[in-house]
Length: 295
Image 1: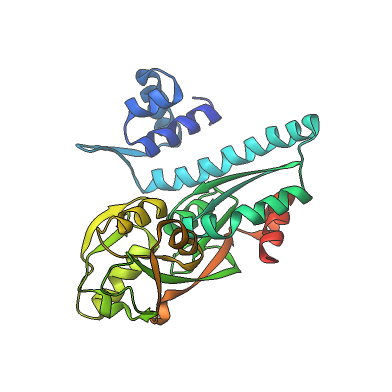
Image 2: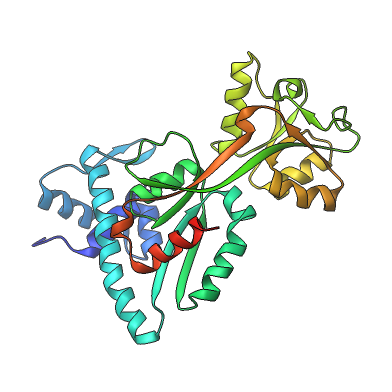
């Protein structure tokens, strides 16, 4: 290898993300032997080991993690060259990658992105749902231009801006023992089974932390991957659940559930916008950040 090339960097990223050379080869539509050769040439050119092979697959070394971030950034810059030239040719003036947690996507972003695109119809917005920890990590690693997450310690070097507040509420079937109340403390709910969200979700972590502080634990009868599924499971009597008030309103009406205010201070949450560096954002991304900050 005479120099670094985009193909080798793309294949390296694929191997790290997929965990095996075979899976990376399938994803990139190339022979596994060719992927292995590219990785070996990359390690030889950089004179350092980038990957270690374990019985679980392939894991990056410390140098590999560093190259992963650099490679993503380099390929993004190359993509920007192509995208911006295509924008001039096609009339599209920008492309923005957004990672957001499910609370922002279900409560706020549909209307806000609609109004943004009405004002800037030549900008494309690519929105992906991620848990909050993945949002901040993705922005820090340049996998997204803008992130929206529930404020919590994240350990990333990011610029953060205010966005919205939301409030968590408890939902129950109409015939549940708690259903007659208007509000309840979280500690008073821990004798009942819960329907939880998937492992790693911010709400689940909040519930587990709050239960731990009271010396108890949350009894999850089942865990699901969406608010829709959570509400349907609660409606079926499999447990009670916690979700944002703005989301709960829809399901309370359609499924006949009860929503109770949680009196705990942590039930009020701050959603934030994050970027690596605002001044370094493409113009289209700056416009979207400013639009979201004004909502």
